[in-house]
Image (cartoon, rainbow, N blue to C red; front, side):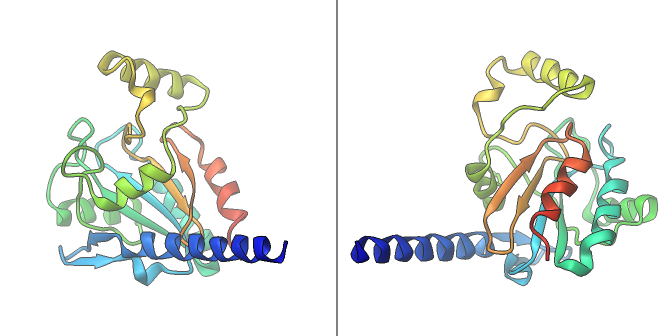
Length: 201
């Protein structure tokens, strides 16, 4: 019995260490286009978002900034990754995108260089996130129904893949590097806030 308990404890420790090292070793490019890892955010609750500046969901920047300002002093951070893969709704250079976001929505949270979230050039970070939290539907309501109709026109079997479906998909990561939740752009920010509150100190 003691041996079984020891092995279970050891496995839990290995799993936790693996989760920590995996998320924090993912490479991304910062605002200057320099490669970096997420090691700087170790121990924080992270909300990782793929964004766009010309999308119907772009006003979510207001809600995200409010959430960031509310909980940033409690170990919470939002990591913003512009992506132009959905309807070409994040055109322009990083500088143009950043100027728009700071000028229009006054965002204060970290914003990174543009990247792909799906396909052969997908960022390893988003590949990592998708493997740990697959697509589980758009939820309920008019926005969810609208997204479902749009996606089914493009691919009748779209629900079967873990791919990012649209701009402003959000992944919540706890202090130990575990990807604990995924939120589609159609889900209310209040759902995200409730999940964040369960994790922060």
